[in-house]
Structure formats: C-alpha cells, structure tokens
Amino acid sequence: MIVRIANEGQYRLDDGHHAQLDELDDAVVAAVDAGDEQRFQAAFAKLLDFVRSEGTEVADDDLDASDYILPPPDLSIVEAGQEFSGEGLIPDPTP
Image (cartoon, rainbow, N blue to C red; front, side):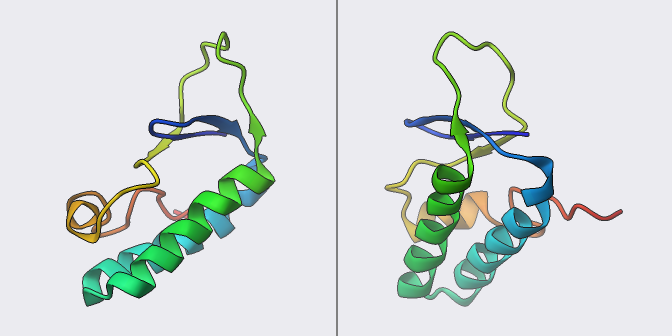
C-alpha cells in the first residue's frame, strides 16, 4: 500500500502493516474526540513516524496513486477534528 504524508511525500508499506496503521490512526481519533491536544500531538507523531520508519520512500517520478493520504505534520487538533472522525483515515482491515 502507498501512504502519502501531505506536504512531504509517499511511502510504500507492506500490506501486513495495515492493522498496526489502523490502530495508530484509531489512537489519533480517540485523542481528537477527547480534545486532548498533548495526546493528539503524540499519537499523530507516532503515526507519521511509523509510516516513515516502516515505509520506503516512493520516488517523485513514480505515478502510483496513494491508497491513504495523511495530513501534513503541522496539523492542529482543530484541523484534525475535520480529518480524523469516525473510523479515521485508515479503515479497519477486517470487514
């Protein structure tokens, strides 16, 4: 799967990471729902760090579409409230 971090780039991750990516996304949703700025910042940073560390950067000339698009790293909790709701940005891997 390919995950784009807005304003940064795309990363190719093995599909086996989908469940963990979903868990990290759910942690961001929970922090946003709770209105906890500090918890949100920590959870969002952990999500982005996971994508960067477990993924392989996709070359700029690679035209493969992103499966998921994450907001930019400087996202505020107010902006996150519009992005991370319900299931979040990464749907549950199990139907």
